[in-house]
Image (cartoon, rainbow, N blue to C red):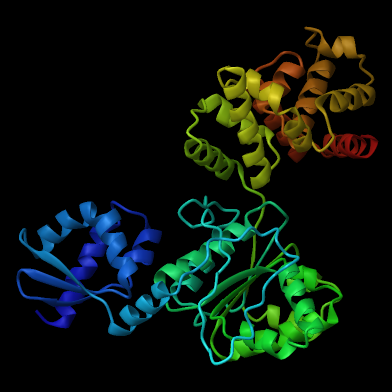
Length: 466
């Protein structure tokens, strides 16, 4: 069988695998594999390193075996060819004991491993949290670009157009999780590479120590040894001229040497202040990927995954309630869910919407942006000159009915309250009535300019008078 035929049959194998595992898993574990020989019984596959062998045998053999049997024959045996260089480097790496993950709060007494006479290449702690991997990261529209780019970087660090990979977004959206996941992925795929994660605060503390001890050259040379450098919270460089100069030298060296840089920030490069222009320019060289707040479906997936990991059974109506009411921030979702599970466990109560409401009041308040349904109703009643008793009565005259519809429309636009809550708070209606009211108001605005002007005026009152 010629090499072209090997590749053709292997591609058929990948196509069939796509029906059983995700595209990401195929790209991660099977695309780098190449068939190199098949004698009718023994199929030899070239793999980048031993981690591929372990992963395939442990996680995918049950899926792969029937496909291999169908395409190559029932008696086919798999053999793996690992490049000698990868074997040697993997052995060297395992021979050096790598310390366990160190707590990120220890920034005061950081030991700098710069000055080690006679050693050019050393093994050091990558400072990666074992809990931050792609396997337990939830993908959604809010993070898909950053995650996909991160996986591409992990597959081929330093050789993609995403160098540096600059990931930015508000606090609590998962920047650290993604960049550390990249670090883990690189170490798994390329165990010969040196990976280091460090926050800018730690980097600054190390720089100050090196400066006091006259070791700036050693400090810079140490960081120039790193193959994949991950810097968290790069915005902390603001106003630190000496640190900026050192980082500029490190950045330039790594970039020219084809090494990978990964940066995170709470702002895009263009909004960073008091950082040298030459650095800002370099931050823009690669890809800037924005993390937005999780959308509804992503929050649903996060809640389900976190609950499963915690071993808790969360009813679907509670999952929906949490997704609709908790502020769109991953940390707040995790905190709220932990609080709910803990209270249910300690109090011996079932996890219900009622319990969720009692426990999560603080989170619900955050999502309402300080605009309440009661506030909206008061504004609408005042605008249409309708007293509150009439508004809440069973009266269905045209003016009262329209006022209720407008209030429901405003509540849906400016609060995160569920439709059922909006309906029960405005005339005791159900969620279907709320949806109908919102559509009626939107349709009327499209055809009636005067009515649209009224809605815009009410909206200004709602936003300004709160």
